[in-house]
Image 1 (tube, rainbow, N blue to C red):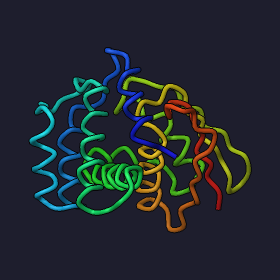
Image 2 (cartoon, rainbow, N blue to C red):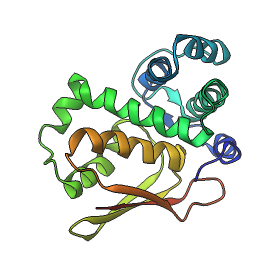
Image 3 (tube, rainbow, N blue to C red):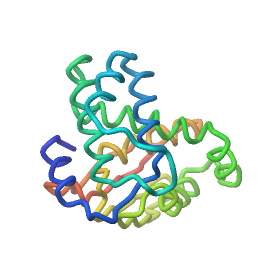
Image 4 (cartoon, rainbow, N blue to C red):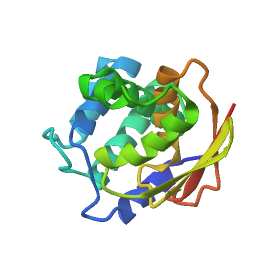
Amino acid sequence: MDTRAALLRRIELAPPDARAHGDNHAWVLRDLERLYGAAVAEEVRGLVPPMEAGSFNYPMAQMLRLLDVAALTAGRHSGEAYEQVLERLAALNIRGFLEGALGRALWMRVPREMHAALEWSVVSTRSSVSHGRRRYEKRGPREAVVFYREELLGPAWMRGIFLGGLQLLMPEPPRIDVENVSDEGLTFTLRFTG
C-alpha cells in the first residue's frame, strides 16, 4: 500500500509552497508518545528540526520527513510495519483533532452517516493542507470512493485518517480499501464499503 521508498519520493516531489497546519508537528510527536512511549517520541524529536505551531507554515516536505523518521523509529521499537505506523499515527492524529474544541465544532453539523461524513471530510481537507486534489463519489447506499491526485501524505496516512475519524463518528464504520496506488503514492483511491 505505502512504502518508505514512495514516501521519500513524495518528499522529493513536494512543491516548496505545499504546506500543512503547523500543529501537525506537535500532534505527531504527541501521538508517537501515546502509541509507542516517551522514549520513542524523544528519539524522534531529537532527529527532526523543531517547528513552531501555527497556521499553514509547515512545509509538507518537512512534515513528510517527520513522518518518515517517526515510522522508522516506532517500527524499529515495536516491530510494526512502516505503513502500519503511519496509519496508526494518522488515526490517532484525527481523533485528537475531532475530540478538540475546533473539531467538535466543525463536526457538529455533519450527520453520523457515511456519505455525509466522507463528502464533508474531502471538502474540509483544505483546512489542514494546501496541496492535492480529492474527489468523492457515491457508488451506492453503503459504497463510495475518494480519488486522490497529488496527495503528498500518501495512502497509509489518508486511510488512517479515515479509520480514526469514522470509528469515532459512526457506530458501524465502513471497510476502507486502498486501490490503484501509483509508484510514489501520490495517486490512489480509497474505497469505502459496508
